[in-house]
Length: 443
Image (cartoon, rainbow, N blue to C red):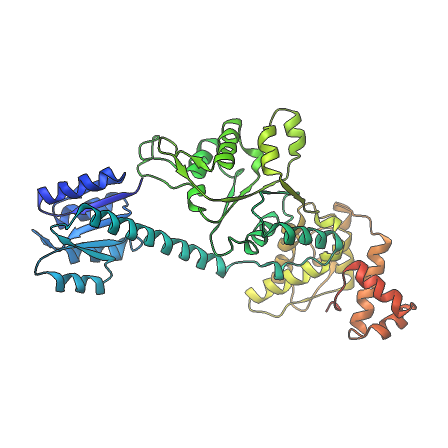
């Protein structure tokens, strides 16, 4: 329920506005002076402030100024009586969202103005969220995925992104499930709307329901204000539920209802809220086994797994290891304001031979450490582990791929010369390049 503060020293007019707005379902607080309005503003947040221009201890411009400085996301509408239109125009120049005449021409005039102002405010907040996201956004074009195991994943992403299907991403921690989820969102019909992530494993069972569905004021101890949940914030866009397998039975049932009916109630509330949200879920658990053990609802599993995508662990996509390592090394060095050190052949062999239990996230951390410690080159001794710690057998394909990349690099990308150096035909080399997803020499 949206909360509105009405500031006017005329008790009759104040009650009139309160009655009209309360009938529309808004929660209304009232004030008769500048001082009282500012005290209320310090005590709680409001979605909209409607203030008279003339008040006994000042004017409405002081109310407007306080809200612009302390809660700029809250729109302020000025009330203007006959003879104060010039002041209302001045208020608009200072940042007022709109103004309304006194007395009202009709209740509908107030209803329409309030609804329009609140809708515009919500739209502006969504635009700001999108702007923040774009500053840090990964796109599919920047995803490093040349290994065949990963290119198959991107092919599935390309197929499902434009649809409205619910997607379930399955993979170990650190493989990049949120990155893939953003990729799906960025290539969907909802790309211009918000992407809202929530890690179900990072919140306690007592908080996760309120975080997902929101709560009303007074719903529980400490609920001093109404809180919008992630589903409402994601309206029109995409909600990413990471580690969905961690939800308890009660939340699984409530989530199933939202997915089926697109409606829910906030915690402590009774009003039905309807949302239009695409859900992308992710898990590092075997949900089929969890269903068999009675730990995860079968009907919810079928609802979220309309289009499952398995993301391979880093050890199963060796063709991406060195390119990812160089990417993270260069990114970290750039953030430190220095040139990126080069990986030595010995370091490359260790990187390829390590099992990467922490997957891409672990590789990123290792390269960040190397960028800090190393200047010109990164050797095997500069890496914080030995291959024996988590060995991954080096296959013939690993060796062959590495030899092809070295030959291409040594010959400046010239495939004919590289084939001659390797002792194979140009046709065989071209076949191997396609098989291993090598598009250019690795520098």
